[in-house]
Length: 351
Image 1 (cartoon, rainbow, N blue to C red):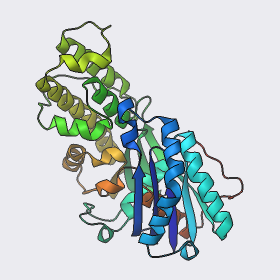
Image 2: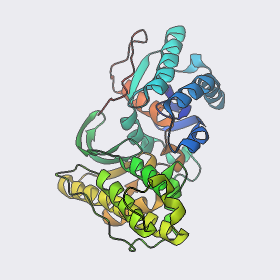
Image 3: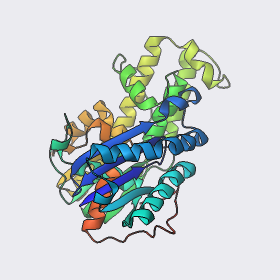
């Protein structure tokens, strides 16, 4: 079973071929992130135009790298939500066209679920993959990215429930906004993590949102960092946030980054540990772009009595391998196929 995956939900144009849900045959990603750096975040129109230019070259490269043609593919999987509408549209229309032209079954893929399935790809397929073991059920999934922060409990493939999610900002979004406050470039996650290495995480006291159950909130933490930066800079609350970085020393920036990261991670770890203690899953999977954060991985590993499972960094951020892997499992478990003549995008799709 070979599935071609197509991902275009944000600013990465990606295609990959995965066999049987576990064996990675190719993984190609073309990112337009450098075009968005000047704006401090993704500009939807720029992202969509970039997808138009890159989509077919990326797909052709993925097929070439996998040493196969479109005729050798058993199905096509494409992200149809959640994400940016214009970006999703390019991937979905391309996948629909290919499915019709080559008479291939089409699988619509939920972007959040796909992140979880990145960890099912065999560690023998990627150099230096850090996955400790293959996921088993029941499984607790900790999904942390720029658009999502969720805890999900899987009893089996496609038998899952959402335990909790962010009620405002996702953790990755908070990283991006805090990075902008202290003058770091987009994307904020890796830049804050790097700067935090030279800071003291105990420099400042920042709040953890007290949310019911397994829900999260990062909006208050983001605002607390803004107020902290204003105090450290010696300015009033009406001082433009975009100018704060110029009034902060490098040491202040590093300490703010370290303190923010520590509290953000503590928020995730606390909820994940609570869910593990209540539901006793056989494994815990960390998924999404923020799963690349080394400190988060270490803290979760230290807090849990089982080895944390996570993919290589190149499979944490948006990619098509995770889309193809989920497509394989949908095919193998006789999940419904999408109509290539009518499949629509769903920018606000949830789990």
